[in-house]
Image (cartoon, rainbow, N blue to C red; front, side):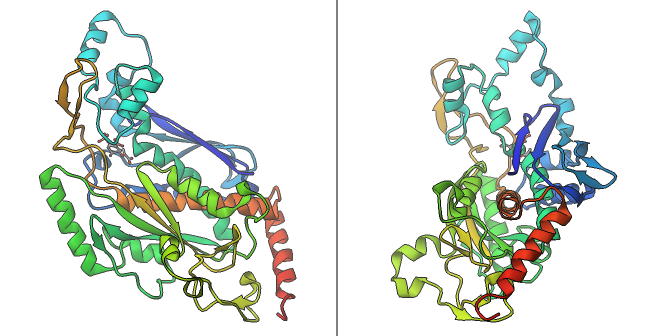
Length: 398
Ligand code: EPS
């Protein structure tokens, strides 16, 4: 239904994002995308690169007079830092002098945990820059651009996507029993996007200490999607189950190593009576099929389909693999033991990862919405959703 692809190197001229399958008639301004790009650039613990960039989108196609027109939406986001990398990143062949200079600046002390080593072996390159430029999480800018349009579609249908940080570098945040109704406004007010001010202080201390040590930190964000109608996704085939589609989307984010839905791994440690969410009639809860649950341990998904309760996904990110106090490695040019390359990088990017996870969730849910409600224009999708909701309203004594 919905397809997107990205292109671009971290220090190349620009990033490109192409999103295909959005209906016509969706109001869309560059500022809708730019505000999400700005959210991704925030977060305590980021390096100097984020002071250089000020990400902004240029629509190249698919949008006219403030509305989508149903054609592929292509977007360009320029890298401001490119002007400092033009010679290194130049696509043209080099003369011998320049080639010699660039060889001396090649990245050959491959970083443990990064794509450097596996990438040069697989793609048969001598300079790990050919790998790291694309493996860089800079690419996620283009995902957030596509995700911000998916988010616009969902918003028109009453569905919202938010996130907050629940763990950083060994410090847990206490999760409020009731999340704020505008989750992102609350989370974005914190430099770490966490709702626990005490934990926030401890996390900032950890980040400062890690920076002094030349070390890096990982963490966990929780994505929450509300307003979903029951029955997106399907139980009938493995590749239509939303748990799997969300898992794949989240695990594709650089440095993400784990995903939990609802109670997640915790559900494996206790009995069924402590896990499954009991069902009661609740007329008027149309999107949930006129039922309610005292708990949401399922995280809003049963049988690969939305239940109508909030979808809750936790996403775990490992520490960034570029350490300023480098780990031991080999130099692939000299074949000697060496300290890994220490390029400028962030101490942590977990707050940004939450925004990226929101974008990926928005893309998965926009796809699931288009699958169920179809339609080539926004009004057609709205009519189809309204028809489904009035059918649901009449069921189970609603
Ligand atoms: C990154 C290294 C840093 C980060 C970058 C990801 O960039 P640089 O090497 O230019 O200092 O800032 O993240 C972004 C540029 C971004 O937009 O998120 C890496 O090696 O993955």
